Image 1 (cartoon, helix red, strand yellow):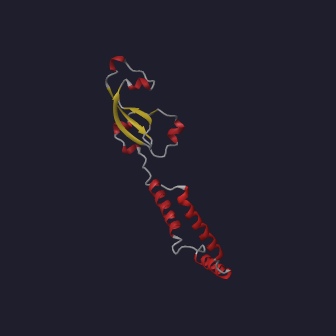
Image 2 (tube, helix red, strand yellow; image 1 turned 30 degrees about the vertical axis):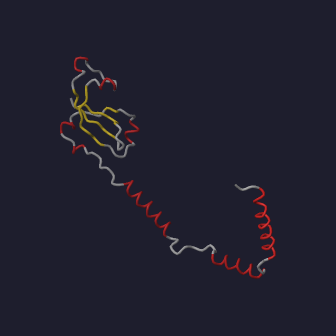
Image 3 (spheres, one colour; image 1 turned 90 degrees about the vertical axis):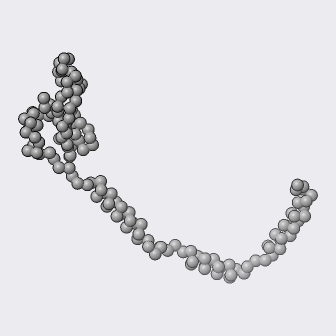
Length: 153
């Protein structure tokens, strides 16, 4: 164990070493020359390929923009729909008409659902026929949100 008595010679030797080192100093000219050389070697300079990160960033932004934009969805033309769908009548809006009109890409999907679901949309439903399926076409936004419905039977 280290006791204060065993540390006294060590403290004394360290004090002697400190005194001896203070008497040894480098000449001022040598000190200035070393400092100047250090500044020259470590001066701020551009790396050899400094232009690579900005170029990579610009390429990444261009690629992401191209991927996100992608091909524009084609609108469903009335002549492309089956004749039964063309005779079915108008769509019933489930969202405000302004929202539907501003939608850039819509999709028409044929579906079936229980007749009781019509009551949720405020349409009259006979209780005897509530369990029967209804054929319909749904108009969906590009995000998959139902915008309108057209009843086929």
